[in-house]
Image 1 (cartoon, helix red, strand yellow):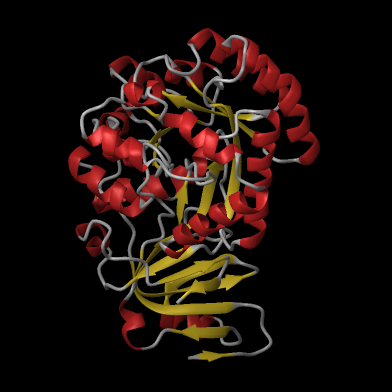
Image 2 (image 1 turned 30 degrees about the vertical axis):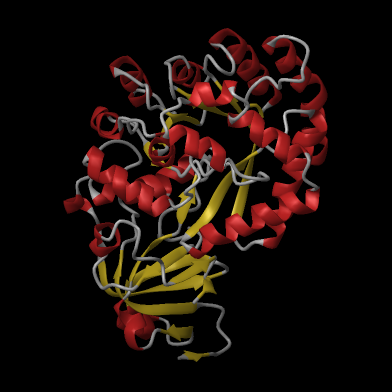
Length: 420
C-alpha cells in the first residue's frame, strides 16, 4: 500500500531485517558477531538518499507527513542489504568463446588456447566487427541482468577493441548503455589488455601509441577517468606497465591493475603507484599479501575467473587476516568468467576461503565501492544513496546458505523500486 502527501520524504518498509553495513570497517577481518541487524525495519529516503533507518513503526511516528511505501503480505518478511557494487567486469563485448571453454575443460591451458587463436584476441576480432548499436545493446542487456540481481553499480572495461577507433567505439557504447539503464556504469579504459596481433611494433611502442592517439580523444569526449593494464607475461611486462601507469598518473587518471593472475609483478606496481585497486591476485604470495595489506590499494578478488579457469581462488582469507581491504567482483567476460553471477561466485568462494558472511557482504558493497573511488554507496547510512535489495527470507543468512539460488525479489535504485 502506498499513500501520499506533500512532504518529499518517503518511508519504505517494513522489512524483517535490514543489514545496513554502516559500522563495518573498510579493512581487515569482520566477524559476523559485529554485523548490525535492524529488525522490523524501514528506511526514510529523500532526494534518492538515506535519511534515517530504524523501526518501521517508530519511523512512521517520527515522520508523520512522509509518504509511505508499505510492504504487504510476504514482502514484510524480506531481508534487505545494500545494492552490490561489481568493481570489475568486461560486459561490453560481442560474440562468445564457448569454443575456448570446451578446450579448457578438455585440459588445454589459458595460454595454449590463446596461442591457438582463442583467448582475448578472439573477442577482439568479434568486438571490432560489431556496431556501436550492437555493443550498446549487449552492454545494456548484461547491465540490466546484473541490476535485476541486486547489483546497482557496475564497472565496465573496454579492452576488446585494441585500436583507437574500436576502443572509442567500446567506450562510447558503455556511456550510451549508462544513459539507458537505471544502474550506474563506471567506465574503465583497458586498451592495455594485450598488444594487438595486427600492431607491427613492440609492446612498449603500442602503449606509446595508446597514450598519444587514444588518450587525448578519451579526454576530449570525457569517456573515462580510469586506466587499467594487464601485467602478465602474455600481455605487458613490469617495466612497460610501470611506464604506462606513471603516464596515466601524470594525466590525472585513476589507476587499476590486472595483477598477479599467473605471476607476481602487478600488485607491487599497483601499491607503489597508488592504484585504486589490484585485481585478480590468484598468484599472490605472502610478500604480495603483506604489501597490499599495508597499503590503501583495494585487493579485488575475482572468483568467477577461478571457477571459469578451474584454478585456485585468490587468497582472500590471508588478505583479510593481514588487514587488507578485500572486494569481490564478478570479472564477467566472454572468456575466462562467463557466468556473471556475483552472488553465486561470492558464496562459493566464501565457503572455500572461510569468509564470514559479514566479510562477503562487505566485499560486494562498500569495499567494492572503495575500489572505484566511491564513498557514497555500499552502506545504508545517512547521506548515502538509497541503493538496496530485498530477498524473500526473514533471515539474511539464507541468502548465502542457498549459494546464489535465492535471488533478490525487489531492487531499489536511489530510493525508487526498479524491480518488483
